[in-house]
Amino acid sequence: MYSLLEAFLTSRTDIAGDCLKEVCSNFEPLRAKRNEILLPYGTVCQHYYFVNKGCIRLFTINKDGVETTRFFAFEGGFGTALPSFIEQKPAFEYMQAIEKSELLRIAREDFFHLVETIPPFAFIYRQILEQGFITAQKRIYGFQGFDALEKVKWVIEHQPDFLLRVSNKMAASYIGLSPSTLSRVKARL
Image (cartoon, rainbow, N blue to C red; front, top):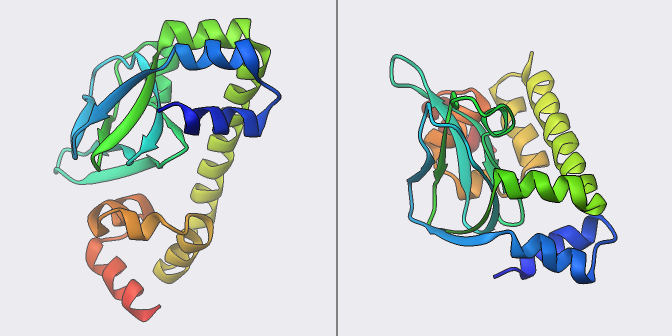
């Protein structure tokens, strides 16, 4: 259950032996059902998740009931409602397992204890934050001025399995298109 997490950690920094065991021992396995809400809107986020199998997404719903997806975490990735997790304020989004998922989760207190006491884990946390910021910036700035076809091509280039794994509705809400427009664009490719 921990081999993918160990591979993730050791591929990014020199962490082994007791440090690696200490980090992994703070994560607990969690099985989530398809479409299970892991964090309801307005709840303070207390966990960081690592995806062993499946997928989690972060999304909002506007007053008209329209969903907008902000983030997906697939196998081998981390995900959480980061502003709520850090600030300990109610989340302005939902976190959901969109597939039957096998997750490893770590409590906020344990997470920050590892960041403070194990330098390689602090380095990995910084890498996760930096990569998340860069990806979000590329998506935001890349999508500005892109037409529908360019947006879909960008997603295919930067997240190749994305369109194969998530529903058209979720993909469209992430890309910023209507589901029907996404379907038309995909048919042209």
